[in-house]
Image 1 (cartoon, rainbow, N blue to C red):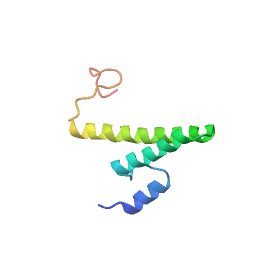
Image 2: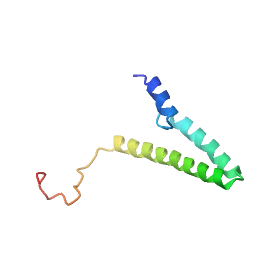
Image 3: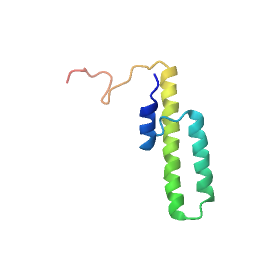
Length: 87
């Protein structure tokens, strides 16, 4: 199912999800180069924050891929696996 229009809207709102892995990597590298060559502290700070967004998206994708390739094990609840579900 092609989600082109939704991807365009999401991208327009700043979401990185519509990007392919290669596009994400290419855009991050271009951003990193701008950050390294920046002479203005304010611009560098903004670019650093943007780099962090790209890193978070890369981590989210890696975690999602891991979860999809490894069957989930039973997860324990916050207060212990031995407590009943009905409280």
